[in-house]
Length: 247
Image (cartoon, rainbow, N blue to C red; front, side):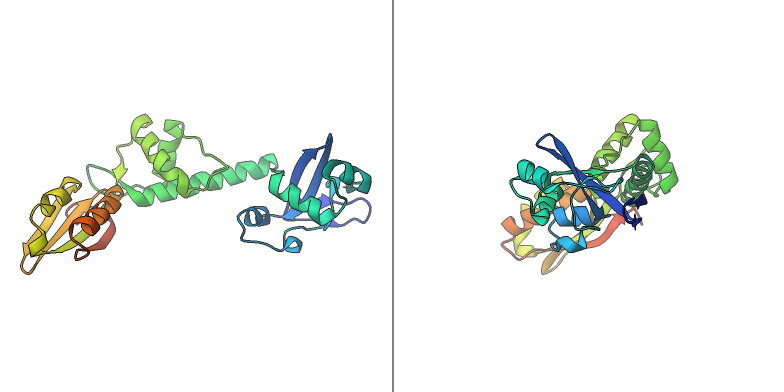
């Protein structure tokens, strides 16, 4: 959102305002969009690359700069960089309604895209289009969480689609190959197959080799089992991340 500074007519674009209330007063800083999160994640460390204007305001939109006396009362210092750092760390990012709607729509689309990549129709083992996933999300009443990234919301979204929508959906299986020395396979094969959706092929020579379909969540379980039971001699390979049975 563009912001005009009445005193010098500087127009700020691509701006995020971060606001903090302290000592009974409201303080704001004008930052570049996306830089606030990078600062909080430790990716960006240069304050000058975060702030559009190296100052602290009472109201950025009106160009009202905070008085040094007020800063000292509220923050214990009138050093504007020190104050800006605290506002960056503790303040709330102000987002306009149109911008919020745009961000939510984009986030919903990203979640739907990730779900479409990871899931299939159980009957046909074929993937759904992103638009079908979006319709199912709306039907299920799925609410996007603006404060979380898309990847972290995928698992919850899939569960809600399975329970609250009419769309038949399941996670696509992962195709893996397990290789274990034949001398170590006794007893281990049965444990391995406990977490397997389907054993597609197996052969035994010097090694036992099994190709199987698993739920992605079983990958770590099988990996840990091999490390523990095969004494470091087992090998686990991913052949396909999103596999359909019989493909």
